[in-house]
Image (spheres, rainbow, N blue to C red):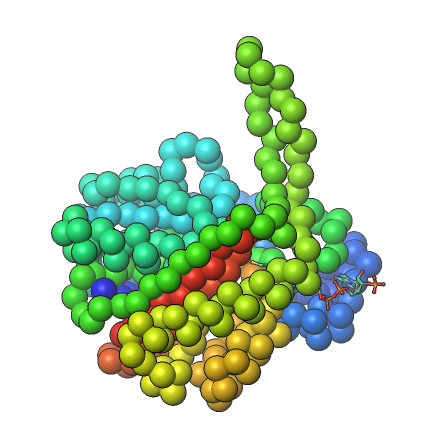
Length: 315
Ligand code: COA
């Protein structure tokens, strides 16, 4: 599997730590020293998640030089969509004029790695040659803006890639183990047969537990894909990691004993954009011409479930 092109889009509104301190008991020093985050982009009036997903997709198709009609599948990952149905993959299909099958998936912040795993399987089964993967996330809808321990961490954004079955084999590992350290319940509607018993809860997070699980799982996942492809960490050009916390990136870097320049980051001005975060960073690197054909890249992410995964791929 090979990535042919990338794209990304973030909302216009940039919200700094000082902006948050106007309505929350927090400050720039606490947020930036504990997480690395200085600002994040949040969807506001006149912009939708679909707009971001469509823009990221247009960029990815143009970069890949692939016509929408030549796509064999669209996989869109999102935790929350603008609508329950249709899936965002179908909405984007309509916008770009594609005709292929479409599906939405949800593996929380690990979504991009799961989508790569699904794409790899579809290609190996001979069911698709060119697949569009979109990760579009509106975390600002899910978080409790009164809970300072979690709301300062997240941002909104969308990323997209076109992958094809050309290129070298990739190694992918995905995991899931039910651990409600990150939880979000959505109110269900009444039916004539069942009264609603579910309370609406915004995102709840056991920060320290998530921190430990994230670091432990990511190190394991990355080592597994390195071993599976008979590659060492030194052979890898970039480790493109989920942008959840700069201290988690640093802990993984310490485990792999690799230099800082191999661990690019953009969390400073993006925050945690869930499954879109790896794609936003990949697109930044691609647009800055920092990746050359033949470079080995490792993607790794973790999230609610608890899910995690890594993928080693040759650019
Ligand atoms: N501003 C100021 N103070 C804050 C705060 C904020 N935004 N959020 C929490 N605090 C306070 C706490 O109330 C606590 O105060 P206390 O000591 O008086 O009780 C203190 O800061 C320390 O809180 P703690 O939770 O121990 O901090 P931490 O060093 O563990 O950092 C996280 C908290 C959330 C930044 C960190 O645990 C983390 O990043 N975890 C992983 C989260 C993650 O990646 N989630 C997404 C997964 S996809």
